[in-house]
Image (cartoon, rainbow, N blue to C red; front, side, top):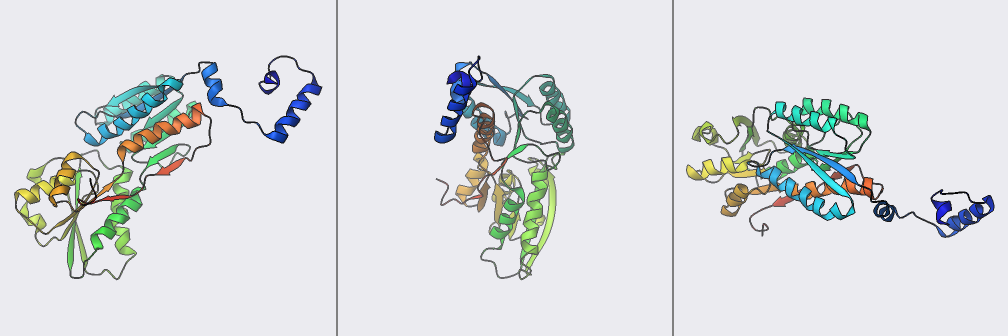
Length: 320
């Protein structure tokens, strides 16, 4: 029977027909996992991400990836890491190294959009599975995505801003960015935020303004920016920068909404300076992305190509 199922050796047609009839009647599913172990098959994944030494968000992502690597290593999975400095030149150099190597699957985050599109087009020529985390690229298609729905998360931030508000309210969107940071996820969150208010035209008492500062530049903030402001929306993980400024200048009564459970964000959440954090579970993203490649390549299972993380709202009362 084994020779018939696996097409090994010469077998009489009469016996083949008998075995196929039994398979059809009782059902048979080849144990891919056992076959891989029997033939000692190896699977090599490439991970292309930013250096995480001073970027806590990516450090948390990496924790999930390493957890998956440890879990799947006994089953033939190995991971090679290509970590680039947070600039497009370093990204392109590391991406080229990935292209020149031979991998069965790829996990990466498209931080630099144009460079990522060009890299994706080249890697897709290898016809190997690709999974993205954190943010997605709509075109070219043909890859998987694990992360939040950025538009919906911004829409949710708009809803949180609107809660328990009746009188005139001024809302400030503080864009705390690096020079290169104009990723699709960042822009989609802002679009989603405004869309909530466009879809709720009865909320006429909200007025909006925006400021942009460089990452970690507290000296670019001043008290005048927050005069008359009732709510602040920070569309990335650096809400703690605004929280620190407000605390140091004893400015109270401003609602802050931001993203991610970074240590500094948690500190100000517990103090009540930050009101809401929308958690996109970066550790789970990293783990789930490797798990996607594992199921697709090792187990040869059908896998959903898009997996949106739950929109988890964290306040100081439910953090612990």
